[in-house]
View 1 (cartoon, one colour):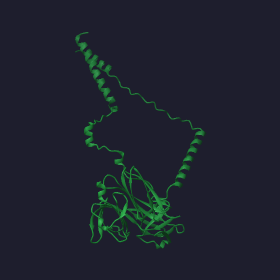
View 2 (cartoon, helix red, strand yellow):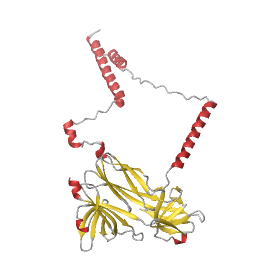
View 3 (tube, helix red, strand yellow):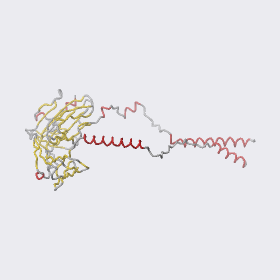
View 4 (cartoon, rainbow over the protein chains, first blue to last red):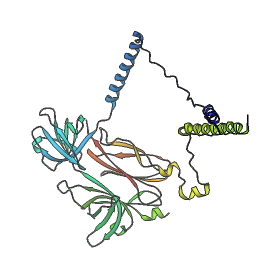
Length: 234
Length: 141
């Protein structure tokens, strides 16, 4: 083929290539004109409404307490810890009140009555990990344990349970312990004797926590509720 | 035109068309929708467990909020769990067991003065419950 033919081929190829043109999106340009006074007033009114709503929300919000075991006491602060979380309690000499929960009454005490390892809950405004205490209440800490009975020992009236978190505890049944079982027919709870305790049953237990013993695995039972395994086999 | 010229023209058009088609596909590639192959229903049932909203609903407590302070000696605990769950609510001063026919449940609990640790458990189809623990503080004003 001669030179003319080559030129013709290249020319035809160029003609055949259709350029792809993407449709362009029209980009709106911002209006640079300043907003009118009425628009500004409208925005101010909206802002006022929002502030009013927020204030009303804060007024109606629920009050919350912070609890923990006292790990450190100083003149103006307490350090309390619970479940690996530490909070600082800011105390005011005149404003902060101290109470001790005793049964059905709260008796006023002094700050000097508080000691390390006491379990307290504090009411007051909280910012991050600091609570400004209005009231400090010394109280008994209870734990709830949920799991299954793995061993029943009639010799010393103990049961061993494994909780949902796979922790093992030995529970001492006392004469004061409230022992209940679920009647699987009526779904009512009934008093039950130790002889009815059996391995495999589900249990819900309330115990008192000894604040000085963090690694405690043996407790006196305050309350125990048994859900017989038969309930789940129905 | 001789035979060679006609052949060259034809070849040029063909080559141009091929190049044009290739470029067209290249430009549309980003806009293509990926088609995920779906297994036939019979196979899908073997690997995907058919579930209802009830079966997967976790235990949630609607009220009260954690660490709430109240000034009354009774509180209503409202929550959601799998329908037909056995709900066990236990605190140092009260124990309640209810069977919830629907996903919503409501239990009234007495409170002791001070901190109330309340355990809420929901037993669904088996003996391993879902559990939540609340602290509610009752203070007389």
